[in-house]
Structures are given as structure tokens and as C-alpha cells.
Image 1 (cartoon, one colour):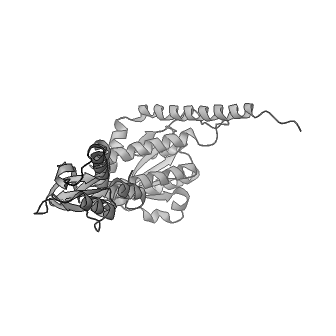
Image 2 (cartoon, one colour):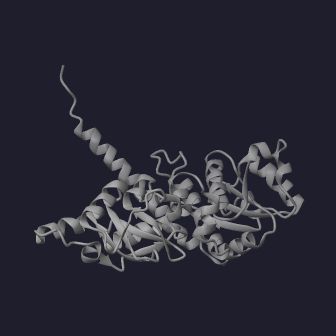
Image 3 (spheres, one colour):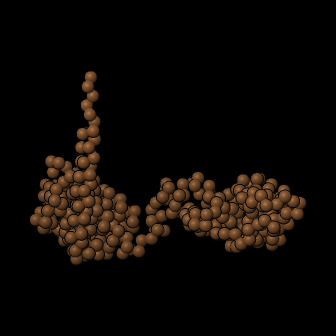
Length: 328
């Protein structure tokens, strides 16, 4: 049986994908003209509301609305989703007096939207319209209009919402980022809403949460080479701290230091910790962030870090401790 040459089909796939990305990139670029004084006023209204941001839509616009709600909630702006069809069958009850309602609709003429808008206006709530039709019912009735007009959909039939939903998504992100800037939303604030998963670890974990407290390798200034090797091997951290009689950190000895010493010295009888240690090692406090520790270790090209608690020796943090927890 004769096989069909797959190359034309593969070229068509690449061509279609590139065309889609180009059209969607243009749609986002075209939104520059939508960042007007009216956009600024809409952001100010959203930032100053004492209520929540209720976002509604129907069809694919409803999916974009859900994403906007998720982004706003995670960046410090309380928001909730209300499906336009469900709203006119009871869900209007979720709208409170001081809420601002954002309605997303490409055409602005959907039957559900036309029924919904008058009720919201009757409640006295402010409406922000995100639409691609400046002459639509929604836009004419809204207090603020954010224009997401696109030249055409990426769909070859110009039907399936593609570039239009990309534009809606982008304008929603622009709103969210403006709001978090106005609110002074910080990485610590972000961590409050993202305690789980790898992201939560990066934002929340401190050195104290990762270091092995039961492994606290330490030798004295006068410890012999045998004692040093035993301490490093026993604690399995590839290093030991050198402390004085008051327990203050004076230096660090790594297994690499021992290897380099053995390459240079044949007489090992008079080798003590003070002779091979690296004085004033790099240190961090137990309360510092794990991500900061990783960045510091990478910057200094080291794998062990001496950890202090109020200037007292607490232990050693190994880079493997960070990597095991997904702090990368």
C-alpha cells in the first residue's frame, strides 16, 4: 500500500500554528489603544470599592471571567464569578450593594446580557464592560468600557472565539496587575494566598524549615585530622564547622578542603582544624528565606552554608536540602 507523504500536512500544521500566534499577538498589541483615561478610571473604581468585584459572562467569555476571578483573588482583590445565565435565575442574589460588576461579552448583545444589565443597574451597582463592540447594548449601558475589539478570529471561519478571548484575557491581566500595584501587594502578601505546592514552598519556607537540626557537625580548633574526618563522615553534610571554647563559629572545613590538603601534605601528624579551616565562613540566619539561601549559595558557588540563630551556631544547610524540597 502506498504511503502518503506526511510533509505537506506537517507544513500545514506549522503554518496554521504560526498564523494563530501571529493573529493573537496582534490582538494583544492592538490593546495599547484601549489603555485610555477611561481604563484608568475603571481601575480606580475597582481599587476604591468597599465591596467585591463580581465578574460575569456567557460562553467562552464566562471561562475568561473565571480566570480573571482567580487572578484577582490571588493578588489581593476579592472577586467572585457569576454566570450570566444563572444570574437571571437566582444568582443575582450574590451581588451586594457596594460590589462592582464586570461583564465580559465580545458582542455585547447576548440575550442573557441584555436581561442581566438592567437588573444590575436597578441595584445601583457600577458596571465595567469588556467588549469588542462599542455600539452594543452592554457598552451603552455600562459606566466604564474597556475595548477588546479584534480584527478577526484565528479560526479560519472567523467564528470560534480565539483572538477575542486572548484580548479579554490580556485586558483582565492588565486590570489585575494595575490593582496589585495600587494596593502595594508584595511577595509576602502573595504567599498568604499560595501556601501549597512548589510555589508555596518558595514563598514561605525559611532556612529553619529545611536544615537538619539533629546533624550539627562541629569540631574545636585543636581537633585532629582523624576527628575532623569522623565528624564530617558521621554527620553526612560534607563539612564541619570549627568553633571556639565559647561555641562561636571560627571557620568551616569541607571534604574538599581535606582533599586539597592531602594533595599538598604527606606528614599528617601535626594537622589540626585551625590549620586547614576556611576562616569567617559564609553564614545566614535561620529566619531568612530558603530562596535567598539558594540564590546566595549559587552566587558564591558553595554547597554548604553555616546557619546561625541570633549569632549562635545552629547547623549547616546543604544545597541538597533545598533541592529535595523543590526550592529551585
